[in-house]
Length: 153
Image (cartoon, rainbow, N blue to C red; front, side, top):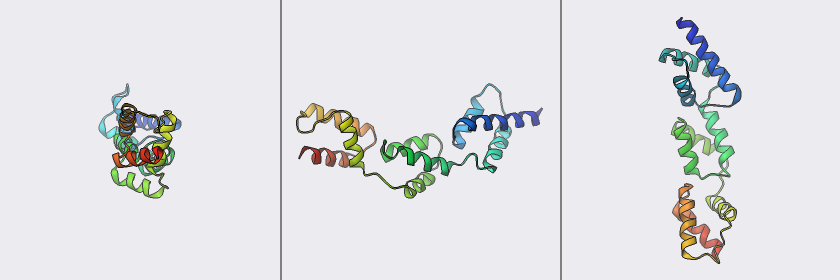
């Protein structure tokens, strides 16, 4: 019976990975929360199996995620999302080093344009709301101020 559950866990991992990439933590969570109750040994065996074929590679996942999101999200937000997905901080740092960085000010200006923010005509309330919005997106306060000043000049 134990062998059958290990085989089933491996097949479940392979089925999940057919559709999209997962981090090791995400796969473990999927197996743990599924309908079938796999033992920790079964989960370890399944994860070890897919890792042996490099179907699960957190470093590759981090690099692809950074490449895809670097023009849409702040560095801090990407780091937080990868951390929540179980990617180690060192792998995230390596992924950022291997990809070309987009300046925060460029991303901030893109968000301001998307939100139809006009710094020349904005009152204090609008400026505060835009600043708060950008801060929630993970941009640093200094970068937000620089981008808002450059646009208002």
